[in-house]
Length: 141
Picture 1 (spheres, rainbow, N blue to C red):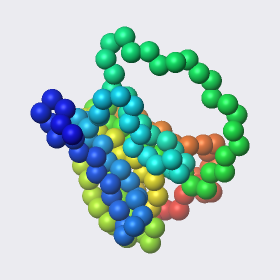
Picture 2 (cartoon, helix red, strand yellow; picture 1 turned 90 degrees about the vertical axis):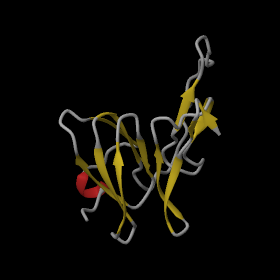
Picture 3 (cartoon, rainbow, N blue to C red; picture 1 turned 45 degrees about the vertical axis):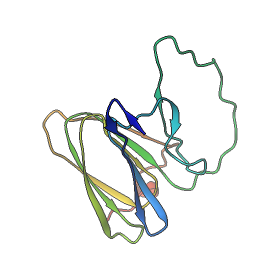
Picture 4 (tube, one colour; picture 1 turned 120 degrees about the vertical axis):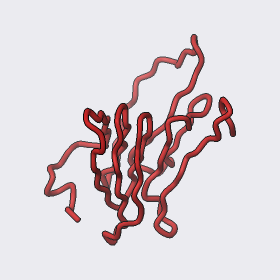
């Protein structure tokens, strides 16, 4: 699909058959509501692209028991640049990416590390909770 003459690029980063991460570049948002994560992921990530006047019906999310086995997160670069290293579950460096303004990286499994490349870089990080503390939540590579 092409929007405004720019080919859409949503890239999955795989370790054999496992999707470790999904990269969404700034121009990748399609019209309407598009979910990037699968229904089985612990973190549900989607994009909105609507015209003026579009209304989304008011709603309340019900209390639904869920069993969460791992932390997944999204990083969105508002400003600046970030280097992201993606690791396999076996702690092997699989890929290095450069994220720029309006890029988002959805981290589903495996490992990751970041290096800020520009002064005044601004990143929004979202992950599922509740937070159980650094020692319980992560293993340093």
